Image 1 (cartoon, rainbow, N blue to C red):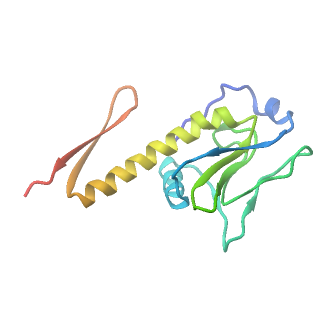
Image 2: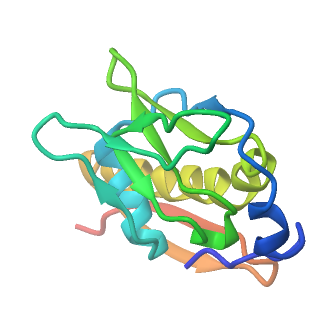
Image 3: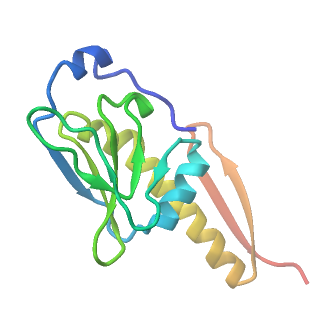
Length: 152
């Protein structure tokens, strides 16, 4: 699970600041399917849009809520506002969050998502190439993957 961070102050202090706008952060070549698997691997609760109907983020007096395909609740990882991920026309995602939460979520959420996705992509490639994977975690928390040819 991704650790919760309180480095930005109390949630009540942040929630008293109105969301001035939602910002969009490109997630490059991340698909909804990969995102959902990464969120599951990280143990984060989420809600997915059903039947091509998108979910709305809670807005504020200053801005309407944006529509997303995957929504995470207020207070996930200590976020001040709800946030989510919206698929563009090419199926790739962008993080949609308040400008207040952006820098925090890029560190506390986006980086662990990419690590989980990279791990999964390596596992898929290793299986295709018939390689065995050994996983270890270093003292600093980094995960190392060792790929070896399968024994006959």
